Image (cartoon, rainbow, N blue to C red; front, side, top):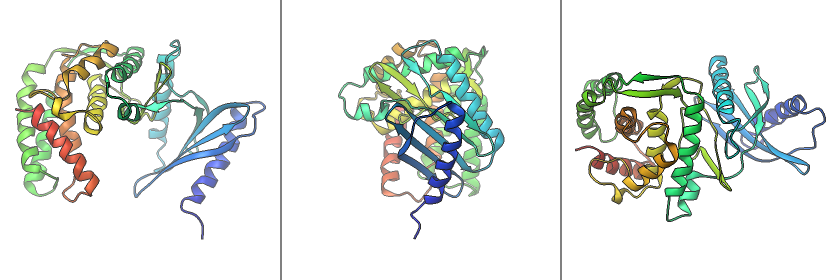
Length: 322
């Protein structure tokens, strides 16, 4: 019997063999040493690490499903924008694209060594230096892809939360703890006025900047796994990263009422970030929107591990909202 996903790994090996000769005139011998596979009803992606005794490791990423040229092109565009933003920085980096196969939705890139932000936090009692480093990477990316100063308009996300509430009221949508979710979605509306019209900054958006997608090693910090290129208020990436950290590893008992994460750790991140201040309207508003966005992903029937994650998120929400 064929091993699970063996056909995907064989296809990825064939793609690597073609791309490595595009990337190098005389490539050394490489061997597959590790792989990651995402295979569900919607997506089939493979990431493979290849090592060589005479050259740095390489990473192949190939998306078998869905076939979406626009999405794939958008991811490449975002990664190249991040490359340009960090090109002159020695200690802030992203993977560098070496070769691309558009038809097979695959690209070969350099390997970033290090441990994830999440793993480092789980090994340390003091998370402040780690969050400071993460802030430094995100500031470089946002500064290097800066588009414009723009008046922040929270009404659109606030309306979307009310739309979700209407779906729950009609029975079209059902999530865990939806009575409390609906109350918080209405409470979000109170934040619209104080944040509306204040100036924030718009830059390229990573799109999925979570505690797994930041890597650190010997004073260097990098990020990977970009979503397709788009521009948005910088608070989107900040909220995604900080809430991801707080849900997975943050000390929820240290969060005062009215805050989304422990203030000392929030401040440490912004010591590294510095591109907008911590009271930026996008940050203030979107940190709470991110709570509801993540909450909305928990359907009514949860596994044990998902239930534990939901309980942590709900505890954060109880502190962040009145």
